[in-house]
Amino acid sequence: MARAIWRPDLATGISEIDRQHEELLANVTMLRSAARTGQAGMAEMALTFLERYAAEHFAAEERAMWQAGYPDLDAHWSLHLAFATELARRKAEYRESPSPTDLLLELGVWMDRWLEDHLMGADAVMARFLRGNDGRTASPSPRAPSAVPGRPSRV
Image 1 (tube, rainbow, N blue to C red):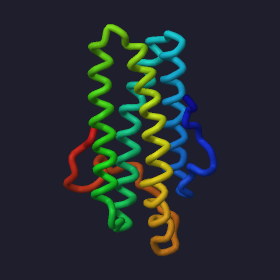
Image 2: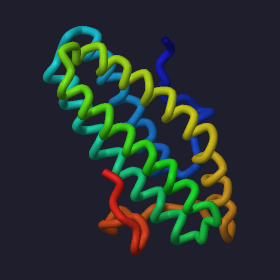
Image 3: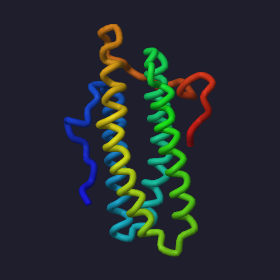
């Protein structure tokens, strides 16, 4: 199974978001490698990082969309929520499994596919809007604690 690795066609043109996407993909690769080589501690660290970092990244994206008045914010937020829900389900399954290595490998494959599909699809559309908004390149604010006022946290 091919891994989703950072490559130019995944770029949104928004440097902070691209940097975060690259970091997410690198850590999915680390999760899969650690699971494949039996490094349970490393796999656990990667999984914990990915869960936290995905939530932070989604919040940054959602903030940028909200600030720019992105019309498909609700649909995009729903995709993020679905990811977080599925990740939590799979993480719970992993914790209770007699064969956690197989589940970690499956989790890595799922994350690869989801991230690549999301980057090439919903994020590409969102980025085109953000880049075209008043001719500026959007830059998500790094400090706000929640993505969008009134929205619950996903993870």
